[in-house]
Image (cartoon, rainbow, N blue to C red):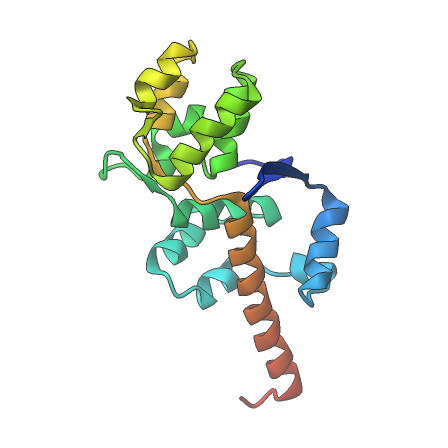
Length: 195
């Protein structure tokens, strides 16, 4: 799992795309705007998240991966929301392609394609297709499309394993909602320790 933070979130609207850069100040402001003290948020453990998470697969992922920080917790949420084509005998996070190219979110596809040398517009086109679960772009398969741009074969294979990807904003929202529940429970227990 990643130890570094997300660099950005890709937002979409009727006018196109825009990148929202993320840094620790943005995270703290976002937490505060959701009524969460950043210091209290940092006290939340993966065990607490697993205990209040209703989705069985998400709960299982939190227990197995034991994320230690905000970014890792977001990645686990994203992993639980995304769909991949893979060998069901081996968990996704233990698959060799995933170890080489850990694709948790749609933005990860964008970053990997840009790092591989693809232009921004084309990388966004592929990212959107994968995020939406599409299998083709402009009438050709994603595989053929990526081959046209000389994307590394291993990266093509990794991207083709992704059937649907959550975006970072969805993962962050899931984590924030869960954090609110945990902090509400803690507050209730402080106010009424006999419950």
